[in-house]
Length: 143
Image (cartoon, rainbow, N blue to C red; front, top):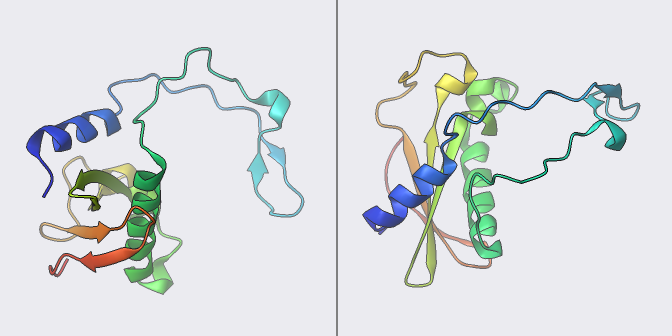
């Protein structure tokens, strides 16, 4: 399982810590997707990148695999709602005995809910994933 020190380190790295938001770049229209994206000239590149976390490639693969599993379990009719998107999720990654353990937590406060709000009682998902990104098992809980 995740060691408390590793969990604390990952959690603290993923926390925002009060970083001031960057000014959004002026949008330009993208004719093929119908969305607005900044042009490369309009992007304000940071002088000193302050990462949220630094993960090795296999940890990123593990996090991606777990996130895809969680998103596939959400109701299809609600896929456009913030509460059922990746925007409302936190991912915590740990490594133990060559297996990545990935816990996904819901954060409805990122979708306008009051801080500390919960959509389900004690919701989380925990996965065991290989360094190649293959899901070995889902923790036997019923979120």
